[in-house]
Length: 207
Image (cartoon, rainbow, N blue to C red; front, side, top):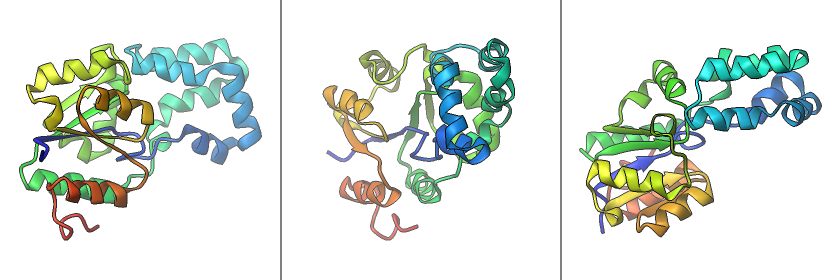
C-alpha cells in the first residue's frame, strides 16, 4: 500500500542528536564519561521528554551537582549545539514530500518547550502538518499508547502510515500496530525507502 502520510522522528533523522559527541568535543571523553556517570543527565533528558519543564529540570540538576553545574546547564543554554548538525539530505526529502502534497507528521521524544525552541532554530521543524511531541502528550516512544494516540488524532489507518525512526525499539512498536516502518541509518537509505513506497521518484530523492 502506498502510504498516505509520512511520520518523522527528529533526532538522528533530521538533526544529529548525540550529546556524547558534543561533550566529548567540549570537555573530552574522560570528563564526559564522568559527567554522565555521576549526574544522571540522560535521566534528566528523559524526564524532559516525558513532560518535565525544560529549564527548571536542567538547572535543578545543576544545583544538585555544583562541580558539574556549568556543563549540565549547557544542555539548556546550548541546546542547538547538542542538536546538530542538520541532516541536509533528509531535510531535502521532507521538502520534496511536502511539494508533492504528501502529509508529513513528526512523532518525537522531545520536551514541549524544547520542540518550540527547536522550531525557532530550524525552519524545517515548522513544515509538519501535525506534531506529536512526547512532552505535550505525556507519553514516550516506544509505549504503544503514543502510537494509538497518533492513529486516533490523524484518522489514518495504521497500514497507511510510514514511520521513520533511528531506534529499533521505536520502529518495532510501530510495526506491531501495523505501521509501515523504516529504521534510519542513512539519508540515502531513507531516500530509497521513499522511492520503494512510491512517494518519490529517484530524481526527486536525489540530494
